[in-house]
Length: 417
Image (cartoon, rainbow, N blue to C red):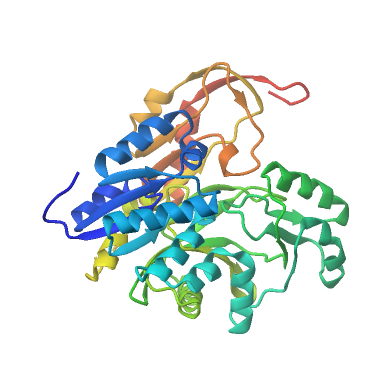
């Protein structure tokens, strides 16, 4: 896949397929490293095709095991020695990110300081850094294991939020109303194979937003503010996002506190996705990640403004100025909530997809499939992405799509149809 006109080589850990042609168009050659089991977690039966497509458009594709830290480190060193990239870059899932930046810093080809990645991706380091700079005050405590949390609760007013410090995608985050619920939370963490450090935080009340940013050589560009639609407690699984939130003094304050965080963290280059609650006392940072937002938020940005946030990652890396972001519409991802049970039949998908305001429609169930309980992002029941003139219109259109779908489900025993 080589192109002699492209001179800037980037060794990129888990680049998503959409990244690679955009990088090429901005003058970069991408040498890709992936972990097959990580790909399977996102793409399931489509993993082979997904990795084959990456191999087709990247300069090369190497496969390693991110959980084997020594093997992963060795694979990075070998790839750097063979391909001589100018940068070693990782803007994928947080779990494998820190080691990549450590190797990059050791070899002098880092895009960001290791410490900035620690702060943004580790929930405890984030809280400590915010407290050190008197920024976004939130009461918190930490423990090495979930079994040690009971001893910390006397210092808080219940309910509190409890969360693992090293899991992503809102997995294991719970609103704890009673100490008696700790065992249930422990069972949830064990289902993820997690037995590491945890946080206890005061429960922040108010609407939640995310701030999408691109940093270029220490200058932090706010691309937009996204409103989150959260599911019910205690898990608060995200059931939708709307972009952009209209400008206001509140969005200005939310954007400012995000930029302040990125500055004190020492973040230099690339995307960040920062979650903020607008409390009665002002905006408070929930968490942040050194990557683009999930849940198709980059697609919402492009639908609403035409701004290609994935491409901007490489525009910023090249040192060229970013295009202005001018929203002209509203875009929404809306997750379906289906009754539990076994699917008998599904109708209406073609009619819904034919609507001119539907950008994408995903229903991952067919006859014979079992609808699971939604406990995290992996167990949601499909989605539709729509555009419109306003957030209100996008909600009406999402409901219009739902009305076209006829899903016959045999209910699980004890659950209503």
